[in-house]
Length: 495
Image (cartoon, rainbow, N blue to C red; front, side):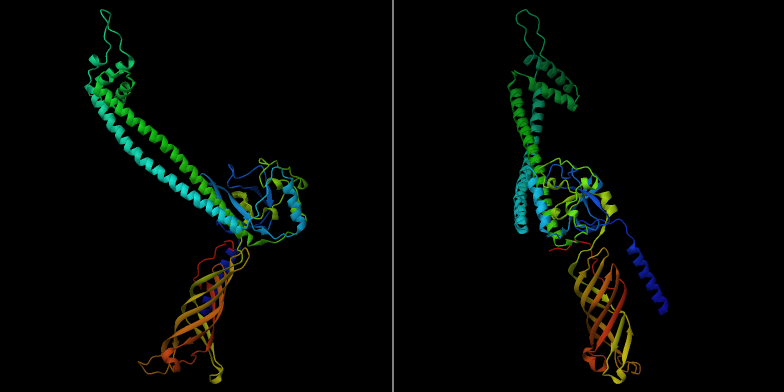
């Protein structure tokens, strides 16, 4: 039975290992780290620009370069690419620095860069966000107030419209509005607005209450230049006043809505800019291994048989390096656009070094108890399931596989046998609860875990009946998800 169980566990471990070794397109984790499996083309990405992705310039990221995914770019429901920041290239060669400085100097219209500290940059960006949040809130509040006022104005217009229609229906158009003949001359032709008034009034009186007929009557009244009927004239003036108030509020609301949209976009841009600055700092906490080619820092596109790029914006910070083929230390902390297709074909998840607190529940199925002070140097090989609360530090190892070491300490309550348990009379306790303290190391590959622990059991009131009271034991564990800690994700190491 034990042999079959061991074979089953071995088969599960082997299957999991084989699945983990197969290389597939990565599932993208925003703010996660990756490594290129081949040279991959990228474009400059400037968040605050009208067109953030500058397709007039392209560079290559060399195979084996580690980078950080900062943002996902979509068009409609389609993911078109990602904004990435390379881990800092660990390049302190003054020759390289001077070469890049000369390129910056040669760029026309280039302004001096601000070498302020990261803390100062973050503080400035946060202050700008704080100010824009207040402005956006004020603009939104103004728009909300205008919406309420507009709704009230609309009610007043509706009321004035009803009053105007009621008054217009009572007017005798022939006597009040129709032109009077002079002397024996024939009756003059009525003006179009008067004719329209009479037509709409007649239809409404005959029961045609269509909205268009009501609108025609109101329109005819508004076009009348002279209204002898005082009541109708007052109703018209009231309607015109309320309609103007409504139109003015509608115009103000439209302007306020545009202002809210503008401020919202500005705020989103500022927050994205802050995130990119943080991302650059995170990426800077890791370093890319210097590449074997000593001249890669200055390789140009023309040297590699490619046509030189013509920057659409000569003042762009990327334009100074447009002739170069590869992203190197000049691009530390900068953002680049990588297409979704290139990302899928040329990158895999990379786990950076990190140290995090971890906790969970640990199962130790095997214990080896020993004590040379006992007669014959006895030891006991014990197999039972016991669960305990465990916590410690998880060290993520830097590699493309999810491999880590967990340094753990644990506390649990276990059941231990008492002396002479097999010969004890009926009704006599044969075991008792004990507090178990332990510490050890757990190797973890994805969900597969294997560890060794040392610990001590303390039986309390029955200590005199427990042969291994306070004696050290060794515990072993091997299997899948023995330690119930949360799954590690491939995120970049924070500073």
